Image 1 (spheres, rainbow, N blue to C red):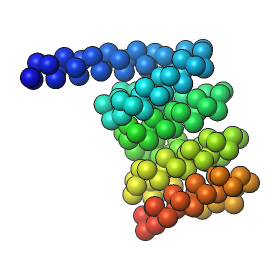
Image 2 (image 1 turned 90 degrees about the horizontal axis):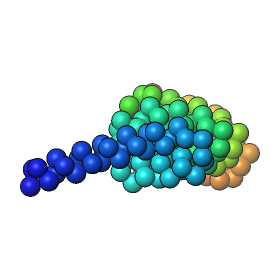
Image 3 (image 1 turned 45 degrees about the vertical axis):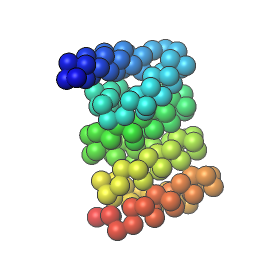
Length: 145
């Protein structure tokens, strides 16, 4: 039983390594599939965090949005991730801003440091972003520093 579990962990690590490589591909579809797979893997994919943080700067908003979602499921390197997600509240694409706000809410008390930025962004021009920010602020209520 232990040997089988160890074999599976090795297989997951190999998959994560391949997905990290895929995040650097030129093909947007490949990057999106890598983000989706890393989201499904979750916390075990913590080696992918640096590549996902780089993907937050991708030229395609769907990749940035998907990378944020994956970071929310993996939940590693909280200071670095919360800081990067907070910066995403300024993204030019409303879907990315909305996703960043939602993911910050999933981080819980660790994201309390983002409350000032969330409050500053609460007047966003897009109603979906405003709604996401309001929901996150409710979730983080009492966690601001």
